[in-house]
Amino acid sequence: MGFFKRMKEDMDVVFEQDPAARTYFEVFLTYSGLHAVWSHRIAHAFYKRKLFFIARTISQISRFFTGIEIHPGAKIGRRFFIDHGMGVVIGETCEIGDNVTVFQGVTLGGTGKEKGKRHPTVKDNALIASGAKVLGSITVGENAKIGAGSVVLKDVPDNSTVVGIPGKVVVQDGKRVSRDLEHHKLPDPIEDKCIALQKQIDLLKEEIAMMKEGK
View 1 (cartoon, one colour):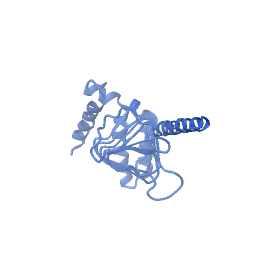
View 2 (cartoon, one colour):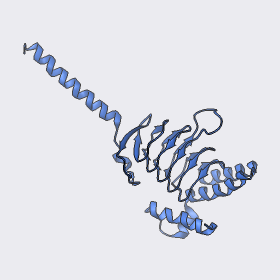
View 3 (cartoon, helix red, strand yellow):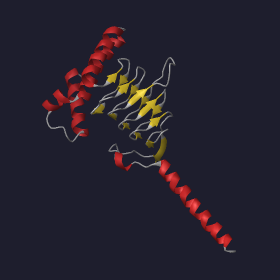
């Protein structure tokens, strides 16, 4: 695909994902996530040619203007959409598939000073919501969703939803999951556990009361 067709494809994704987008002119000039992706493609081209200093310079200039830090070594597929984007960090050995969406404050990072593959692999059609931290050389499966504020340290299966700290799978039905994640309706595994414990406590209270009455 040619350079300008790829740019057009990137802008089309914005219209698909963001109802606030109005015109191509507006999207071209004002969407920082789009600018960060375009800058990364240039930086990545230099990185592959082992011109690391130039690649990092482009990356840091892009970070200054967009608030999004993408290491030039990261591999990013087509139709990658960064919504709002401020505070997004993508590490050097990240591999991101096609049709992936991330929101502001997302980190795809490492867990320490390990060498080699130390950042996540995110497969096609995944969605990572605001403030989520995905850390280490783990895999986020196809069509997976990671809820806002989650911290994910283990592999995420295909077609699943993960929430919480640490992240836990709360939905996995074996079929494609819609990418329209409703952030305010995420299941809360901790709350569910508390409700279950409260029910057990109430039952025990009833049994103790019956024993005291000689029943």
